[in-house]
Amino acid sequence: MAAEDFPYRWVWRWRTVGPPSRKVPWFGDGVDRHSRFCRVLVRGGMNSALVEFDDGYRVVTSRAGLRRRDP
Image (cartoon, rainbow, N blue to C red; front, side):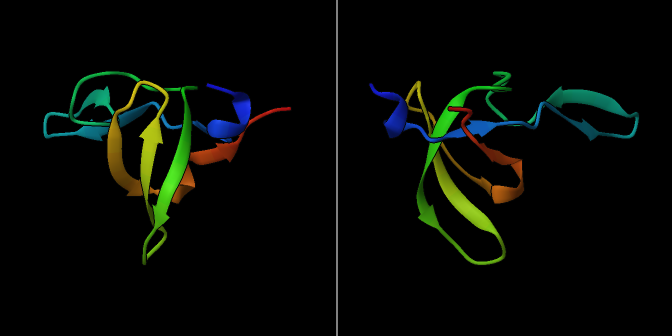
């Protein structure tokens, strides 16, 4: 896979759930994907997108968690 295939980087790490407040990985599968490379497959309404990570995991999430990959 080339760098052009995954032009974005995921930046969100934790989210807080509770009460009681506790931090968990952003996605429900329990894997911390912070700084993992990804690509947007489909853009949706309300700033959402179908995102595919470099390990093949797909999820619908907010585009606010995406940043352009550094050159």
